[in-house]
Every structure is written in C-alpha cells, then in structure tokens.
Length: 92
Picture 1 (cartoon, rainbow, N blue to C red):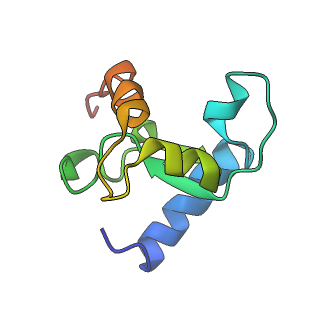
Picture 2 (picture 1 turned 90 degrees about the horizontal axis):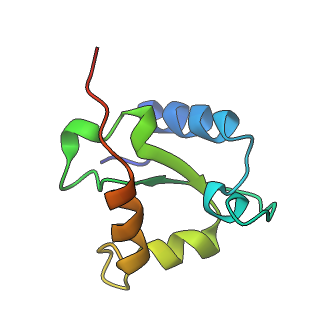
C-alpha cells in the first residue's frame, strides 16, 4: 500500500470526513478523541482485496492505532478482536 499516493490521500480524507474526524474506537466508550489516522481493519498486505473498501477503514487516534498494532506492525490482540467483529461485505 502506497500511503503517499494521491489515491490513498483522497481515500483517507474521505474516511476521516465520514467519521467526522473522531476516533471510532474511543467513541464506543463515550469519549470524543480526534482521529488523524485511518486504520485497515483487515491489513492491506494480507487482504489486498479489502484495501480500498470503506467498511474496512476506520478513523482512529495515534494512541488507538498503537493499541491495534504490535511493535512489529502485526495486529495486536485488540486489532485481531476488531477484525473478528468486522464481517467483510461483498462487492455489489
């Protein structure tokens, strides 16, 4: 995934606007935290077919993003839990 590409920047902006620049994980607990990162629920390197799907992208804060990944970049336990709770949507 080329995070510097114009396509990604446009998609990132779309998702942040969709989520009103709020961390969607923190919002579940009633906390309003600004989101600046768009996270792939199903990692784009493992699931390239979902890389550009809106349902697979969620706005999060840097702090939340760190909780969703291990230091090596793999999904943490919390990231795996989020992935298991998110059912892939079929393309229409």
